[in-house]
Image (spheres, rainbow, N blue to C red):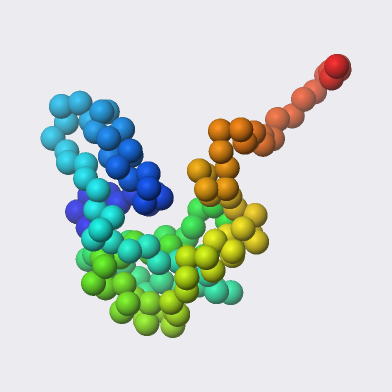
Length: 131
């Protein structure tokens, strides 16, 4: 595609478009929700491989964890062809979420809420007392 595709939860897409539009100022760019035109496919086998990029697809290793495999953003009309080319089988979203949860990869705003405390790797050195 010409430009960039952002992968975000569908319920948050309108909010994301609104927020990004606030920051574009006078730049000659367009920001629009194309979620109705694209599908998100996830391949999570032992060694998942995408069939490669085409004009209306974008694939990448899921950056959250190697076990989450490959994500493919594809134009709706090509989604079933891509699934067939990767020996993929249709799975319910619940199957992906079960796999993601088993890999201990939370999805923000689904598995977390405002009360969730982010963990951090903070090293404390010196004389520190926790009272």
